[in-house]
Amino acid sequence: QSALTQPASVSGSPGQSITISCTGASSDVDNYNLVSWYQQHPGKAPKLMIYDDYKRPSGVSARFSGSKSGDTASLTISGLQAEDEADYYCCSYAGPFYVFGTGTKVTVL
Amino acid sequence: QLQLQESGPGLVKPSETLSLTCTVSGGSITSSSYYWGWIRQSPGKGLEWIGSMYGSGSYYYNPSLKSRVIISVDTSKNQFSLKLNFVTAADTAVYYCAAGLAFDFWGQGTMVTVSS
Image 1 (tube, each protein chain N blue to C red):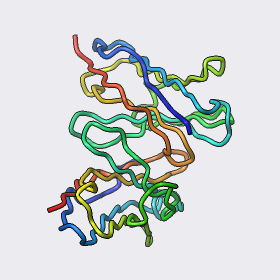
Image 2 (image 1 turned 180 degrees about the vertical axis):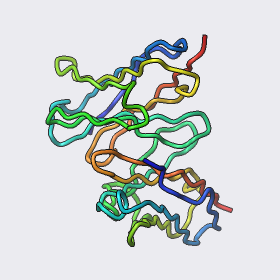
Image 3 (image 1 turned 60 degrees about the horizontal axis):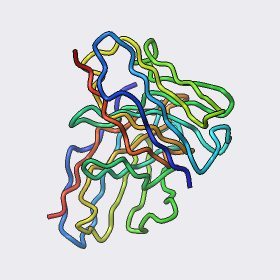
């Protein structure tokens, strides 16, 4: 099970939109509608931001949205804010296993 | 709202067994509404799925760790546990327990160092 591929870093200015990609394979991202995204601030536990490719848990800002095309999932953060600076990880079900992405550091300029 | 709390030794010697417990509150470990899992994060690295337990009594493990990992449940204490055998320095990490149909709920994590 190889880790899903994410860009190491993405940056943007406050108010801008950024998109983080997550590329997998036919055995995971492309085979199930079960990609989730997690936000992790330094020293903290990850927090679920998106599940089932595009669904947003209660309490998560509508500025966060998920999408998928083929073997690549994406997380878009709109109206970037200072508090969005964190590491982001995608995760896909790969029946019956799970595989995480390599992680992306988001920097707010 | 589920709450999870990891507990266990913070230091384990090489070749010995790492044992951690996750205590669940705010919900039942026997609930079919949740999957229960362990995830780890080596210092400065990304997240790695270790394994998951499903309400049906099914257990699945990361193929790279399968030969060394056991996840078990104690319904009387509303806990589930992780055992990782024959640890090396490469197993040094923060270990998280998590639950949900996605990993909706996480414990705060516990740092485990493998060193003599």
